[in-house]
Structure formats: structure tokens, C-alpha cells
Length: 251
Ligand code: G
Ligand code: G
Ligand code: MN
Ligand code: NA
Image (cartoon, rainbow, N blue to C red; front, side, top):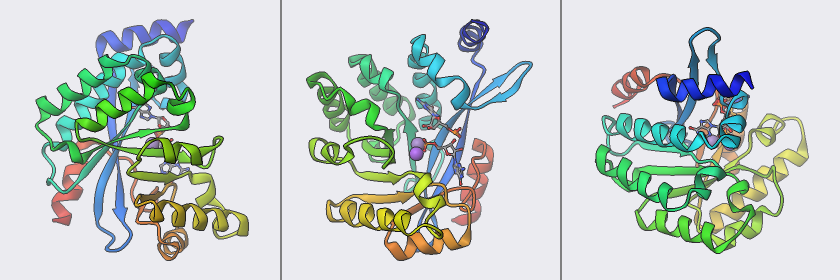
């Protein structure tokens, strides 16, 4: 109740910020993209993480205007980066249900920022595809026709992931951090990372290992053939200024 009123005000006053977490290419260790992550800068409570407000924002439908802002902001910041650096943005299933409105806002964010659509990748979870309706597939296809790419996020945590790989051409699989966390200690986690990486690679997809927190984990996913890595060891989420600074140093 209180959260709902807070959120309504936050949308009106635009109390949101984006932070950017680097993703590296495991072959050369260089940054290949950033994942844009939403933060709520609450006037009295400080920074609030998505886990504490996204589901309420979804229930209220507010994730649509918040998500539109997040997308415009991320594309605008990416337009100042070297053109080989990608930007990924998380999409909620509720944004998909807004249908053509989502397609229009993506086309608009691309036009206003002027970035090459190939640089923009949307991260979706199985939740988006759960109702594998014609409508959902049509929206996905229309977005793809704009030239943007898609990643299947949190891979391995839901049901029947494999059928989604067949019904829609994802560019990337992001292996959920729970598997990476146990990769050095649990043979089953390692087997799953290996199997998913082989499967995705054979289907022509890039593979990002999420939640890399140690040098050992990075080494491990390199050996297993994951093309990309992301996590606190690789780089913390940072504001746009620091992201630009890191890129300047690297190029
Ligand atoms: O740092 P982290 O707490 O940022 O993110 C937690 C979850 O919130 C992730 O699962 C991520 O997918 C989701 N999330 C982060 N930013 C956004 C956003 O801009 N839009 C949506 N819909 N979800 C986001
Ligand atoms: O669901 P999604 O993958 O979009 O969410 C990314 C979330 O994972 C964000 O909350 C981000 O802050 C968090 N995250 C990023 N790197 C790490 C990491 O190395 N360890 C842990 N525990 N969380 C991470
Ligand atoms: Mn994500
Ligand atoms: Na994820």
C-alpha cells in the first residue's frame, strides 16, 4: 500500500537511475557490453534494488513507463560509447503484454539515440515465453525485425527451457549464477554449465556465465567454453560516468 504510493510518486518525479555492469569476452578479457540495471533512488530510504519493487511495479502496470524510461536512458548512454560495445536491457513479461506499445518504444529509443540496433540486446526470462501465444511471438518477431537481439536470462532456473530455444532464435544464453556459484564444488553444477554451453554453442549462440565472483570461476567457465563472463569479479555495476571512464581506459 505504502510502496504503491511511493512508486507512483517515484514515476512522476523520475526517481530512477541506471547502473551498468560490464560483460567481458573470455578470449581476450576485454569488455564487450554492459548490462543496464535499474535502481530506485528513494528520497528517504536511499537506493532500492529491483528485487524490492519490480514485482509491485509489474502488478501496478508501472513497469511499462519505468521500463520505457530505462530503455531510453540506456540507449542514450550507450550512444556515447565505442560502437563495438553492446548494451543489454532487461524486459519484463508485463512489458511484452503491452504489445505494439513496446515495439513503438523500442523503435523510438533506437531512433532518438541513433545507436545501431545490433548493439541492443534484450534479456528476457522464460516468463516472457511462458504463454507461448501468437501475440508474444509476433511481438518478439517485430522487435527482431528492428534488428535488436535477444538473450535468454537466468537460464536453467525455470521449466522446459529447451523448447524455447527452438521456437525463438535467441542470440545468447545467460547461465544463471546459481550454477556458477557451485561450479568449483559441485560436479553436477559443472556438468550443467558444460552441457548448456555445448548446446548453445552448437546452436550458434553466445554464452554468458553470470555471477562470476572469483578468478577460479572465471578460469573454469573459460575452459568450459563460455564466450562471455559477468559478475562482481569481472566488474561491479557502476554509474554511467564510471562506465565511460572504464571504456576510455580500455581503448
Ligand atoms: O542488481 P540486480 O538487483 O539489479 O537486479 C535484480 C533483478 O532485477 C534482475 O533479475 C533483473 O533482471 C531485474 N532488473 C534490473 N533492471 C531491470 C529493468 O530495467 N527492467 C526490468 N524489467 N527488470 C530489471
Ligand atoms: O536476473 P538478472 O541476471 O538480470 O540479474 C542480475 C543480478 O545479479 C543483478 O541483481 C546484479 O546486481 C546481480 N549480480 C551481478 N553480478 C553478481 C555476482 O557476481 N554475484 C551475485 N551474487 N550477484 C550478481
Ligand atoms: Mn539480466
Ligand atoms: Na540473469
